[in-house]
Image (cartoon, rainbow, N blue to C red):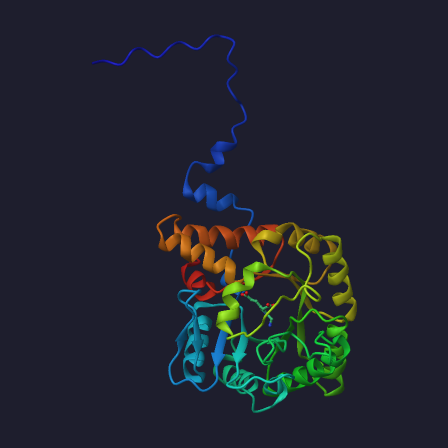
Length: 336
Ligand code: PBG
């Protein structure tokens, strides 16, 4: 059967003279005109180390993520650096937790010794950062110490953060990441670091950190025993003006980098942050964002690698110059 002759278009149809599709025609053209580029140097890999285990423990809700031993941590750090990642953000799970999170400020505590391990292993080739918060260390799972009636005590917590910052700096951390959302935490940490002579240690402030359901899998990754929520200190997902206020405060208190967290559902906040402050803006693609994509991909519902690259590109496009992602090493390996 021959196909019918194509109809002659009526004279009145206007042919486009300007054709945006011209620049999408081939892969080299698309590459040439891309407005946003991902590079390994922009990516920071969060890592977990667990005290007292003889082998790495898989985090069930984060396929591919491990609670490392001190040895396997060094190996993962080495691989990340060989792939070119820009930094490492360390979290630690101590063998014992208590009401004030003693292990956080103890120089022999797991976080501090593991920071020293990382600095020894890769400290000249990447930025070694540590999450500065008490929640991995407290038996109640809150990010600070509690008052007698069970509330998170802002100002008492600042004293613990200040000591933790100094302990991390003495262990060799290049950068600390206060993530507890206590008022005045950046100022307290900056003052403590400076007083101890650590003026070169920088602060990546989790400035606009929301009380998010997307931290679910992280609770498993740090063996958290939190009951309840963090809504009296982390932000309400409904707010952006408040995020800008937090970000401005952190910059005024001395933050070198400010972070928005989570990332994907908060790209408007990332954009406004990037337009508001001159310091670099980071975004944290959190555990739940990772788990969602891994779970959908495991079911064959989305193309995993494409989805991962797309989300990271879009977080960069929104204005984040630095992205924390559990896929950092893998993605860094496949970047040009
Ligand atoms: C607090 C902290 C959390 C995360 C990073 N730092 C947990 C929380 O605030 O509840 C979450 C990271 C993630 O979900 O990937 N130390």
